[in-house]
Amino acid sequence: MLARLAAEAQAVEPLGRWAVGPTASMLMRIFTGLSLIGVVLAASPALCAQEVYERSGNIYFRHSNGKIEALTSSAHDHSPALSSDNTEAVFRRELRAAKFDDDGVYQLWTVEISTKRARLLLNSIETGREFAPFGTPDFSPDRRFVYFLIREAQTSLKVMRLNRNSGAIDPVVFGVSEFRVVRKGSYAGYIVACLRKWAFAETDFSFVYWYYLLDSDGREVGFIGREKTDMERFFKALANPK
Image 1 (cartoon, one colour):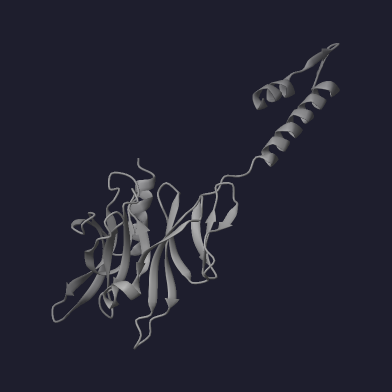
Image 2: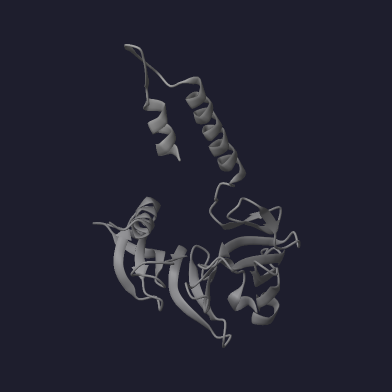
């Protein structure tokens, strides 16, 4: 339509010896066509990236048309992650925060986007001190596993993996500060983790945290970089392969 209207706008009609621009009837047709295009564009909602997020202790889902829908209402929910197929979210529920002499009460939940049906995966009251508090859960690309962080020591964490079919919980990697599951590309199902490493100097040594690519069982595959921007650059390259 736009090509046809542009061609008409360039048309001229002879009037005696002179060439003039579009006639009044042609201008009317052009403006009418452009107005119709504007109405169609205005009526078509802009597509948004689907996402889950936390606000005031509740989990919300943003649809592709921009509509926002509440998935939970407990006022205790945090750290949501959306599955690769946008059908399910996993999140952490903090019923009582941990203190010096109290491990608190933490839970891991999933919720279906379409039905809002929630399912309890883990409860710290049942698992005991070993698996509390839970933090930053995430799905494997096929949703068979849920990865999450637990406290390993005062200054580091470890990544755990929950098999949703069997209920088995296995350690994946120790001494991390953060992690992220690779969702697509040739490394789908792998993990990028910030690992604690020894840094030796001439007269001293200390810990550093650098980013590594790990397979799904926590084995090192390659070095990503020393900064978080290196991890972000890695995921950007996966999302936009050349």
